[in-house]
Amino acid sequence: MSATNSAFKAIADPARREILRLLRGGEMTAGELAERFDMSKPTMSHHFSVLAEADLITRRREGQTIWYGLNTTVLQDVLAWMMDLAGPDTQARKK
Image 1 (cartoon, rainbow, N blue to C red):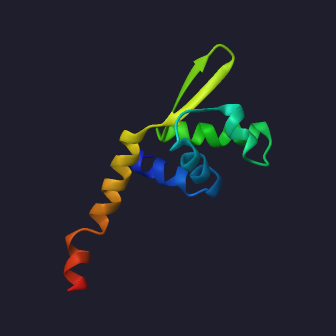
Image 2 (cartoon, rainbow, N blue to C red; image 1 turned 45 degrees about the horizontal axis):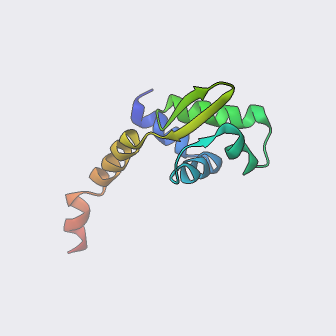
């Protein structure tokens, strides 16, 4: 699966979009993120894995704690791709 397809698969789920939204404010621990959702730990872990596979989030371990953050480079690439879809042809049709 291409990086773009993985990213779109990852953001197709509302819970994963919410995780990304929460991470806009900065890094959060897995526990801090999990507190915001009414989901089991395995379900949250799955969401983290899908986002990490799509390279939309970073993760780092500090002792027993896992910190997650946004990978803004990949998000920018996805947004640029989306803007290309709505590029000049869209602008020409508006006129």
